[in-house]
Length: 152
Image (tube, rainbow, N blue to C red; front, top):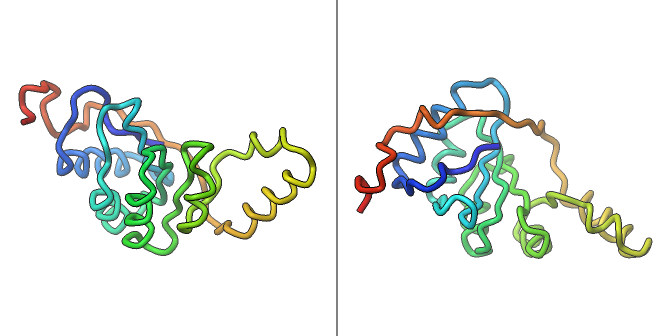
């Protein structure tokens, strides 16, 4: 799972190069992690869709961006087998509604048995088969200077 680089706020074209180089460094499937509240950089829907089409082993997105409209844009533009996971428990149902998948089921395990069964059925109904792995990448592949002064 790869996030955008923290603190330096690179432009989207540099993010494309960053993620492509990280993905090229592994044979494992790569999941992009949209978490701007932790990295200060948003991965725009067009960038995610571009990477999904151009980089074979970028297979999904864990979305904690908080914008269901952007999630919908990714779902509509990305290949059919590109998976989208909810990165925030409170956004799981809306992400499921636009074609995503549940990311963590721990909240469901603490629910009463009828709710737990509903959650399991809903999760199974939206599942697609694929391999899920993580990869690690150094920020040294970043194409742009780490100096915020380079970015307008």
